[in-house]
Image (cartoon, rainbow, N blue to C red; front, side):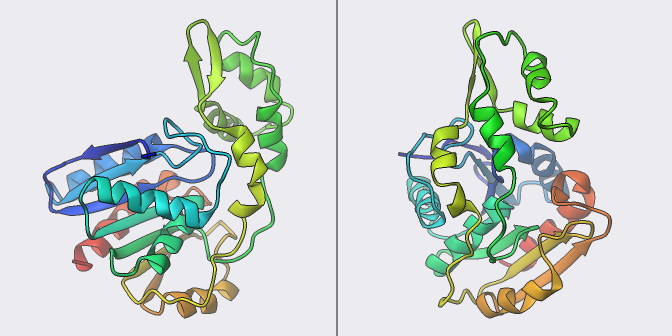
Length: 261
């Protein structure tokens, strides 16, 4: 099955896939897409994607980075793209790494936003379980659901981010995301990217200066897998580096992509 996608500038010469993070969707890249299009008019064919079990893409009982990388290749084949660039944040960044390592002849370059190819401790499980167990029968609007999870998710911005996954279906709300499929293979999301392979193409890792997802101690492993990699730090930004500092992020991505073809 094909991933759901949207193309901006379908006739532009440089195809770039944008991959969101856990519990996100293609719409998360809206601001960056507009800024990138303005920075280089008509240059980038921007393809924003809903990953499996997210957004409007298909639901599956299986979820792993090799499977998600295969999803992307299937979509590229459908779009008749032999070569392409990838920009990915967090989970989407790990998927970018896996895609490049598994298909080095097809991936022209990758931009990885605030994630490293390492094992992480599982985060957000308490939140995801709360979403999964939420009784939506009495929810008439998103704010109703927000009140139900306010105690478990006190951060309003994070709460609003989670609730973008609620979709009205007639008179009731349903989750767009496949919470069962995600929780069944939740540990796979935090696993390291498999080693023993090298991607020698251009790679840019962008980390938030206020985030601890890409620590200095992870850099040797990044360079082992991606020997041509560059690392940029956006001071003051947290894990959602692209939404917190969109201008600086877009400038880095635009400059890197332009130099990679």
